[in-house]
Image (tube, rainbow, N blue to C red; front, side):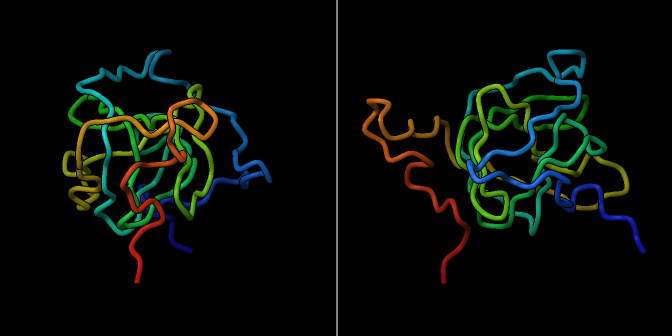
Length: 158
């Protein structure tokens, strides 16, 4: 059998629990030596590639955590790691197929543009829509309904 593509978003071995969270075992985080440098503020991103892997660290060889499908929207803060730009996901409820919560303590990463990754030939994976944070969950006094304001979090309809 052919090995899965490193950005194809192979499913993690731990499935979401009834509470909508995953097994939270993590690889070494950037704060522990990965070299990720923040390069902007949190913003909303469109998934423009067919499938984008979520990783436990900002590198294509890091353990998979989940995946995103084209037309989904997510929030994250951009970081540079060498020549690559990654976003560290902000606290939010992810759309299907991941369909799970990202907690503030999680180190969950998505590659923005695979162009610098030699041999992948995938191009742009995520496109920034605007600056901003996700709405607070219900009951936080923010008046929001949770999730992403004005975003089609479940992907394209139709």
